Image (cartoon, rainbow, N blue to C red; front, side, top):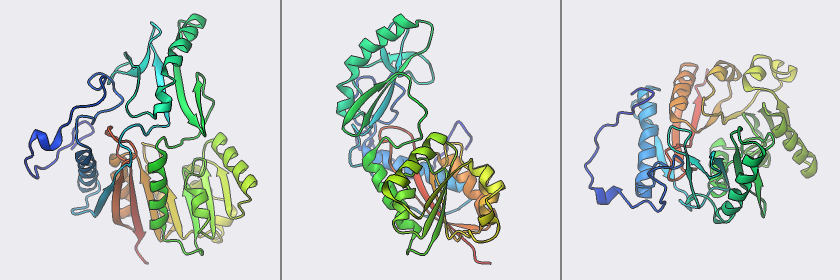
Length: 336
């Protein structure tokens, strides 16, 4: 296994009829947005589970990792609540072709919510106006759902990361809550907290939640929610996870902030630089939400060297029809 190739052992031979379907999207062979539309959905889940298993075996060195059954999406199509369209020099709108900056013009997207597709004709008019105003700049147009409204944006302001699949995000939150095993007495530390996707649901059961997030905009929105909804056991700190762990506040240094649970949801590059700091906190249970099996496996390997045990991992399919593998992993601290 290397960064470009994945080696999988042959388990069984299947026929094309067992695996392949006709992709419903007419742009599938050209557009870089989806990669797996030609596979039956149950095989997509199997494929992603095996990718996760292979990473944990080959990189983390776990010979037989426990991998629970993948959690499928209720809607494998038309699930995205936000898409970002590129504008070509000719005023066409679409997605980039795989591994290029060539725009593949589209009239609809099979994984976008239908209400977003209804706005695509408007983006073509807007694209022409953008080019008339500045033909030298690379333009993009975002279509997103905000509550009941569908919004077009050409210059999105800074915003924290939010999941684009609402149904699966709810399942993800429920999965994390289940495996945190909260009784109401626990102090929870959350790293890479965003705007509080996990933070606020956790606070309903935990004794307290300390959330660390680097984005100022995300922290401000979270603090607005704290005030508006009167959360009394939630605190946000604007900081990178690494900086927080390198120089924690006095109440953590002094031993008064000992955490019973630790949750991290890092970006694709993982959390390698934070792992030694995480291990020093000695939280007995750690939940790692990952969007990249390779960096997850690398981080799990290090956490095991630092005293943690891999309990299990589980794929939750946030992005059907694509090769993206979202997963939840639980690790527990060996008692000293």
